[in-house]
Length: 347
Image (tube, rainbow, N blue to C red; front, side, top):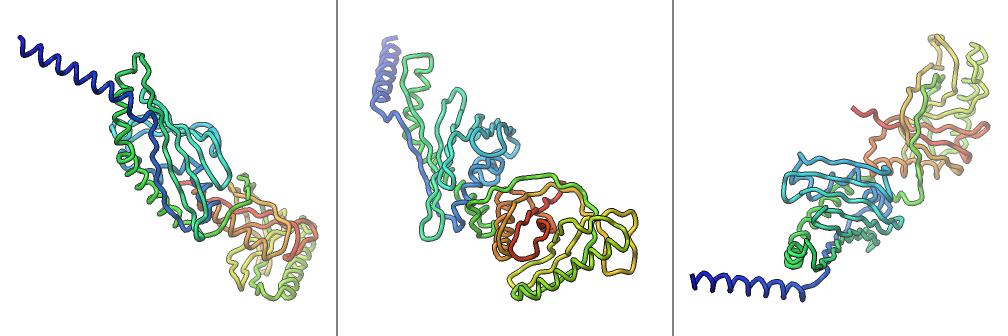
């Protein structure tokens, strides 16, 4: 009996010592890891502020692919929230929500682990030697309040001593995954563009195919004018309507030297005449990313490339063709144009 009392006394002293030591342990924990990614800050910022792509690079998703995930709030930006629930202890359950943004520079999130408390996460971006340095940090408070959670708080103080080693490894894995995903994007700065997602209606068109050299602007203008006149005469001859409408281009291929496209006009018809250079086509309804532009053809080509890169970062597969709708009276050179890139239909 005396031995048992001594053992209990020893355990009590040990518990008091552990609690006493907990009071002098750090009351905050900070974990941080960094990496560099050979893509512009604008791309990494757009990716990090989109929680719907988080599981594509998350270090925890592979630990339990069967975990349940729920998205709420806006699709992107402040208020976007991702909640998860898993039977795996290394994943558990909780949520993260975007609380603050600094465009192209930082993304802040609140992590809520329920009874295990809350933490703040932050991504900071900076350009270093032409690449983007991404710093991922976690900050948690470890209070010791004399309440019903006092025992868990004591354990939390001791867990804080190992947090850098445990969470740091996951951060390193996540940043490596993030870099691998970003490397799949076109290396194009997308800063400054704000595309909108729209629903394009189905449209009947008449088209003439062209293949022109981009370097010779005079020849491009002559080919454009001749094709547009051909379409307008065809409309009048066959009473199709739309001969005074704004033209469209449907780009099949456009690179530094050559532009292959269909020049089109809206039309009204049931049956198209056959054996003519002018063809009828139905441009199907589609969801599309869209931008308005006023400027030169060279500037527009760069803007289309930016829009395609933006879609890649958003995880929205681009379809074909690139559609450019010209304001009435505008030609292929400098002018007002609405650019639309249809999205591939989801399977």
